[in-house]
Length: 360
Image (cartoon, rainbow, N blue to C red; front, side, top):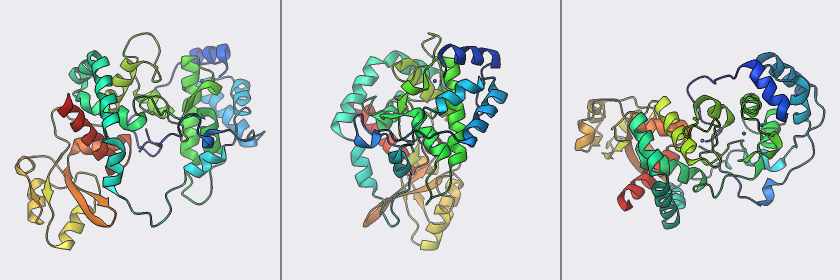
């Protein structure tokens, strides 16, 4: 899950005493979507220790006060964190002027190997997918497609130490873009809370350069808020438990507002007038217009879209030098963007899901 995702809900907090006991026992800890570097990738190598910083001491004090975690244990773990220059480079935005290309983006994900792997994942974990659909109304193919887009079903989960990635971005965020160090400092805090609850050593957890973890690439805060122990073994395991992965993804989408049985989008023909088109595009991917308002502005929806009674968004997908593609996104399209704030991501998930359903 991308670090940029704005997730609903508040984190659940373990009891302070239990957290302290867990932390003392092991000292220390494990959805856009920041794409992870593959295992063995040269960019995943560590750098020098971040060192002794006053802000780290203050951070440890805050965790002790808010969560009852041992200050010295937190500080000891932080002083083992390394500044990873590759993380600072990869978090930077694309070079200005880089053209978006939906066709090229789509080709990365809707291809035979990923579809075959997705079908195998679906067959192997059909029981849990069916349970998740019954409970939350999220179709199996959507859950399977998200795991496929995020990590190719666990093949590419990232090879950065999560402690290093989050500490680098929390305490050494690079200049040249909007400062998001506060976001990553919060995620580092969530990481320590997660560690204390699960009894995991922080130095052993690996993930994306932005700190996302496991098959679904959840940020630590999203794990604490939305991840579930669906197999009932007493632990949330997004690395190896398919049940926990399936349940957590479906639960996240449900909490973000997924509506059972609602399509993700409808076909649409654009208004002739450019100012009408611009007005429909102004809210971006947030559903803001009724089908009647689409029609008033000259946009022609397909029959199913014309019968839709809730709000829609005109979604634009640029194709480089070629004409853009457009769809009318529903609430469920918007929900997928809560996982990763990108219409390209959402459409890749949707089209991979459609391919999986067809071949299934």
